[in-house]
Structures are given as C-alpha cells and as structure tokens.
Image 1 (spheres, rainbow, N blue to C red):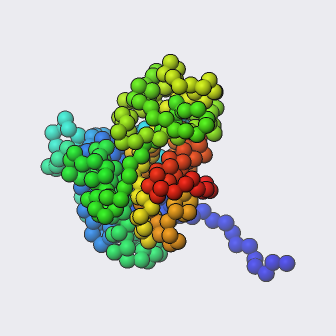
Image 2 (tube, protein in one colour):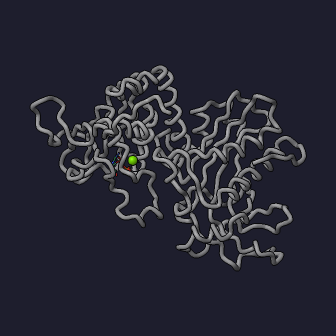
Image 3 (tube, rainbow, N blue to C red):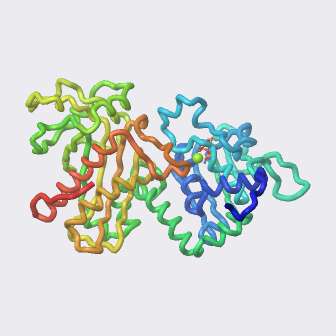
Length: 418
Ligand code: ADP
Ligand code: MG
C-alpha cells in the first residue's frame, strides 16, 4: 500500500499559470526574437533593425517599418488569444501569416518588461505603451496606464527588457549571454539570407547566393550550386528528367489545392531545372497555379501527365568537396523560417554516402507550397511544420539533390534512405 497520504488538489495561482504557459512559447531570447520578427514580416515590413544587449536577456529591441498598430488596438496588444490575423475557425485553413494565436506578445509580457512604440502612416503621431501580465501598465507607479503620444517613425518598435526577470529558474538555464547571442544571430542570419525576397535588409539587389556569401562567408557561397525543383507536370515515369518552361507553370487557379494534393499523394515527382531555365521561384502571382492540360507534349499517355505544379522549391547546396563540421540547413516554407526534421534527415542521408564521416553540407531550401496545405498548428512555437504530401515532396527534394550531387561528383547513382 502507498506510504504517501494524498494531498489536496488546489488551483494554481493565475499569475503562475500564465508564467508557466509563457515559458512554453518563449523558451529563450531567440524564440522571442523569432516571434517578433515574424510579426514584423506579417506587418509587411521591408526593413527591420534589431538591437540586443546581453544576448537579448537585458534588451531585445526590434524596429520595423511595417503597418504599425492602430491606437485602438493597443489595449489588446498583449492579451492572450487576441490577434488581428484570424477571426474565425475557417480562416485557419487559408492562413497566409505565421502568427495567428495571439500568444507571443502576451507570453512576453508575462516574463519580461514589454513596451511598444508604434505609428500608423496616416496618424499624426506615434504611441508608446507598456505592458505587464497581458495588460497595459505604467512604467512608474502613479502614472496613467494609457498609451502616450510621442514622436516616432511609421512602423513598430517592440522593446523587451529583463527577459525572465520573474522566472529565476528559466534565467539560470540560459548558459551564457554569448550563447544566447549566437542563437539570436542564427535566427537573424537565416532570415537575412532569404531577404532577396525582401525580408530583412541586406544590401538591396543582392541575390540569395550573394547574401549567403555575406552572411556565411565566401568560402561557403562559392561551393554552392543552384537547383530549382517543382512538382509536375512530370515526364514519363521512366526516370529521365526533362526541363520544362514557364509556359507549363501557368494555367487556371484552383480553390481545391489541399484536397487535390491529398488525392495524388505519393505521385509527386521532382522536375529538375537548371539556372538557365525560366521558372522563377518567388514570383507570388504564379504560385500554385495549375499546369494546363494542353501543355503536355511529350506525353506517353500515363496517368501522371496531368500532374500540376502545386509546389516548387529553390535549393542552394554545397557539393561533395565541401566538408563542414556541422550541417547548416536553412529551410523556408512560404518565406518563413521553419524546421522539418524529416526533411533535414532525408537530405542528411543523401549526403551521408558521399561526404567523409563526420562532415556535413550547407543546404538552403526555399519551398513554396499552397498555404492551405501547410500545417503550422503542430506546436505553438511553430518551428516544426508539417505539410500535405510531405512524403512525396521530401522524396522529390532528395532526388533533385542527389542528382545534383551525382553530377558534381561524377559518380553513379547511389542509395539513400529517407
Ligand atoms: P499573433 O501574431 O499570433 O497575432 P502576437 O502576440 O504575436 O499574436 O501579436 C498580436 C497582434 O499584435 C498581431 O495580431 C498584430 O495585430 C499586432 N502586432 C504585433 N507585432 C506587430 C508589428 N510589428 N506590426 C504590426 N502589428 C503587430
Ligand atoms: Mg505573432
């Protein structure tokens, strides 16, 4: 029999509940930064400035030039489950933005001192507001809680001070300011690398490859080859790859993308295009359009000939002569930095058989998938994502990478496991 007498169950104090919940979203300064950066991107910012003190533990300040926040929204800015990004459950299935839970700023306000300065373009002045535990607060006792008018540029500055000041265990768990700083740098660098599609400002007009050179070093950049991939329309099932032109990317729009992806599960195939081909990744208007039926010349009449372009990707990958001590994998899905351990594992294993033991590649992969088929709901921190047709897409990406590497090494086809 049990030697312990049962103790009564009691409700946790509300403030404690909120702090624990906040810790699930905000693990460390870099997770706060990622949330704040994504908000800035969701607000249409083209320039973002980040200031950091003590690895973000003392200060994390992010200034953007996005839409700003209307004064009337300020009382709810740090309220949990308050968001401007969705208003109904059905909005969840056509999500274009990455934030939507309205949890990030709320969480930050429970474990740090949060303040905001924001100005909407057509309003006469900026407003500054302070937040504690989800609600407007005042910087000093006796001063009113209301947002105060002040001078400021269009856009929003989010200021996070003394992160984890009220959760000493969490604070202790942070190894060192320099460790946190390098995580912050990692998040910023990854976003900046893809800023060829106008995210964080690196010198304007730079290509992704030039950005990678600036951020990760010229030694890496000069080892990279460039591969474009997409789902069909595919060649015959014999395995010879054929280039296709932009013409095949066009067609009429469909509203049933997600369902169709599911129906054709497993049939997706990589098409391998070189830099000389015409397809442009990052051209928003042409995303997710269906391939038109009359474009399937070269058909052998197989079922797969009417495969549509439902996703596409751009890869910069190091070759067999590049050997790093650890893998650098930058994954963007619809321009947002995410993680997919399955995709990473797949790519790793393609390289495994080609690189010397203990050495790793550099891979930048930007995928564009119908937003309807990306599930960002897996975890509140939204780093790990799942998407429909994951298996087939991973296969295609790995095939394309393998093909590029085989070319690079001059070797024959080799086996890999996903
Ligand atoms: P979510 O992003 O999930 O909506 P957040 O807590 O991250 O939740 O942000 C709450 C709301 O605050 C957003 O929905 C948005 O309206 C507003 N917001 C936050 N950051 C910014 C910003 N940099 N620019 C404009 N609006 C912002
Ligand atoms: Mg957000």
